[in-house]
Image (cartoon, rainbow, N blue to C red; front, side, top):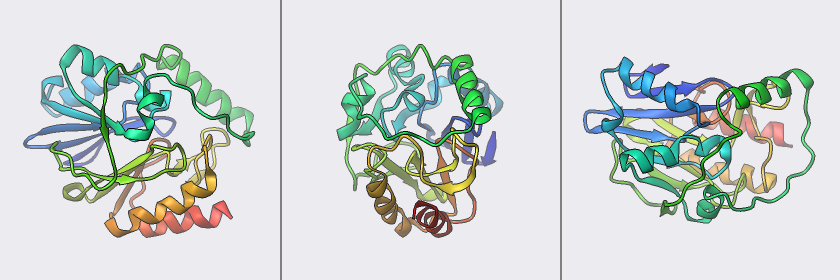
Length: 237
């Protein structure tokens, strides 16, 4: 799905990953579920590119619905996988904290489960090698993504700001579609380790003043970062 000439999305409002497309190549942000490998190849083909044009993949955190095809891309094509240092173990299949009971509605819950199964979410291949990154770094990848520490959803969650795309990628720092209830619009994401910290951390992305806010779940938000963060704060009260 083309958002702009430099921004593409694969997946859908249930689970999504993104491509930053530049003349120097492609940076993939998050890897969705294992079955999104096919979607990645289809999207690249649609713009006249191939896997060989992918120069790196950055994971916003280490949960299974973001790790997806990352190890395949690394192992079969030598593409480095970057992740926040504190989430490296999580992306390798390490333990994650138990979360509080989540609100849910049957329809959205079944849709999330069915999509996860259909896209290979029950056969996650965890990472075996990663490049650890920290807030404040700018990576030498297409789009020159800037790392912003975003702890809360997980200890090592990060956001990525790509100035040339006027976009900030937030992973599960917020969501625009709650996968368990179907509620839409910017709001706190479910399955968050430290919900209060997650909301506080969103202040870190305000300085980007980005137009696009791109979550791992839900529709792309084009209403500006300030409006998105304010909406999450209101709904998190």
